[in-house]
Image 1 (cartoon, rainbow, N blue to C red):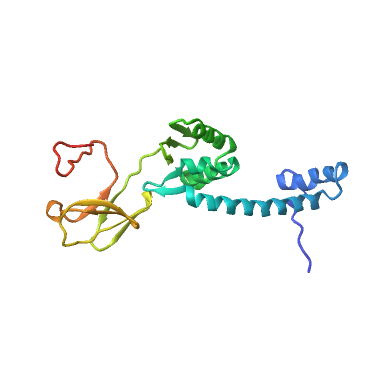
Image 2 (tube, rainbow, N blue to C red):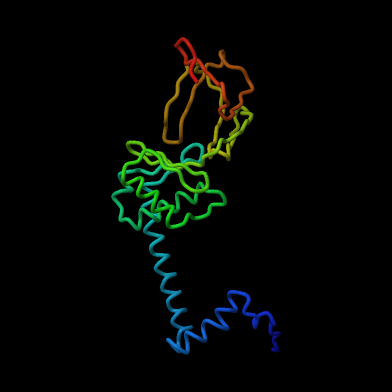
Length: 222
C-alpha cells in the first residue's frame, strides 16, 4: 500500500520535527547510536514506575483527603506529615488540582512552598490561581478564593444536587415536629418544625447582611 509523505515533516520549525531532524542525529553521532531505543526504554520504565507510585499515593489519599461542602479539600494533618515527603508532594499536587481552574496540576515551586508552610506551622498560605490554605489543629483546608452563588428550590420528597458545593439535599415530611440537627453515616440530618417555616423551601448561598435567630435564644447572629 502506498503512503503519502507529509511535507511539513521536513520543516524543523515545529518542535517535534526539530527533535527528529536536528537533535536526534546530533545525539546519535556524538553520544549513542541507539539513542532512540534508549529513550523509548526510559519512557516505558518511567511509565511503569509512575503507575506504581500513583497506586501507592491513591491508597494513602483515601485515609488523608476528603472533599467537604463547598468543594473544599480537607487533609488530615497528622497523617499527611507521617508520609514520606515525595508522597506528601504528590497528595498536595492532586489536592490543589482538584480545586484549581480547569483541574490543572501546580508547578513544583507552588507545592514546595505549600508544604514548607504546612511543616513550619503557618496558619494560612496563598497559592497561585486564587487558592487558599488554612491550617487548623487537625486538618489542612484548601479552597478557591471566590464566592459561590446559588439559589435552588427544594421540592418535598425529591433530592436537589447543589453541584457548586458538591452537596445533595433531600426534603421529607415527618410527623415529628421537634427541631434538631445531627450527623449520621449518610450525612447531616436536620429536623425543623413545619409550623414555624413556610413551603416551598429553598437553599441559597450566604449574602451580606444575612442574620438568623438561634432557636430558644434572643438576638440574632450573622
